[in-house]
Image (cartoon, rainbow, N blue to C red; front, side):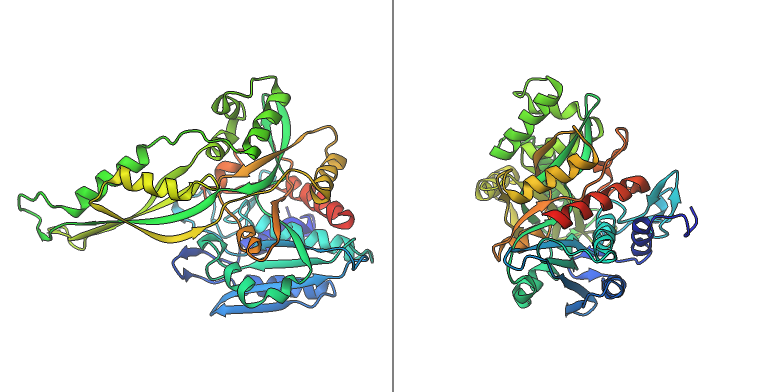
Amino acid sequence: MSDSSLPEVARIARDLIRIDTSNYGGGRSNGEREAAEYVGEHLASLGLKPEFYEPVPRRTNVMARVPGCNPDRPALVVHGHLDVVPAVAADWSVDPFEGVIRDGMLWGRGAVDMKNMDAMILTAVGDLLRVGKQPERDLILTFFADEENGGVEGSALVVRDRPEWFAGATEAISEVGGYSITVDDHRAYLLQVGEKALMWLRLVANGRAGHGSRYHEENAITRLSEAVAAIGRTRWPIRLTSTTRALLQGLSDLTGRPADDPDALAAAAGPAEAFLRSTFRTTANPTMLNAGYKHNVIPGTAEAIIDVRVIPGTEDDVLAELQRIVGDGIRIETVVRDIGMETPFEGDLVDAMVSSLGRHDPGVPVIPYLLGAGTDNKALASIGITGYGFAPLRLPADLDFTGMFHGVDERVPVESLVFGQRVLADLLSAC
């Protein structure tokens, strides 16, 4: 598509993808400054007054407030993040930071997580303001840094140092909800009303350093490898919550399948199966290894990073079980730990989100679910703001959308972005 034929929402998402905001974690990042400046310029073009906060060099956050016509109503935070996980270009079919439009889709790192939603927010608000329409209540548009590192240098610092940005707000919407899945040829939308707790853990194995040619029974890498394999092979039991029970009942009502076999119901969701199965149980995945410095030297220490996502309320039990799995010879250190959340699938905002989807895709059910990952809603929860996942997208049945979070060849249909813009504008004008 040429720029003249490309919908504004896709053009903005493409422009943001072309700003490489890769976040490697642990304070290593390209930074979000240029992306925040781009967003700030767009907000200013709509007549808003963006404010910036950069607590760490180049880790830039931006906010603008849209006055509502009913100042007595609590404000709504509408937020996204501007960073992305890194991409290895050699693994991709396209340059991950070129923002390619191909086969009716926008390709690139951030097309799914979450520069798509950033663009939907900007254009949905623009749809209102350009025709002189006010939202029902104040909207606090916020774009955070560092979400892909747990918000340590982003939302966590913003809520600590700039709480006035969120004055009067009680609720928030952001990513990883409101998108469609297809289950047994039936479409449904998942509305995110909770998130699993987060624990990023470091395993440390100590041994005895020595020459690589020696007979050696105290090898730190061997000890670590056994611990990592034990965790990676552990199959955690299903542990349902009120949200996941409601999800299962909704899928059962949709398909006629029994609700008492969670994994079988998830399997009926095709590409979304793995995403749904992760909501029913704890997951613990090894993601990084660090050991050694020369091919003929046995190191004295070896380390691994484990990404653990926990059913809310079970964090301490899971930590104890992980220590039992790896044994006393492995030290477990906590790198990042954050809360889990669940909120009822009810209330005015939930009703408004369901209604807005219904107006644009009539007759399709909206089902609550518990996100297996996490968002910046965790930081907002610390100042009393209840968060939901609502980045509305009507998606093709055969597109592995959930599999592209942090995956290769990340892409989203342009028509899905346009759908999301319209649904979001509908919601923001009425909720």
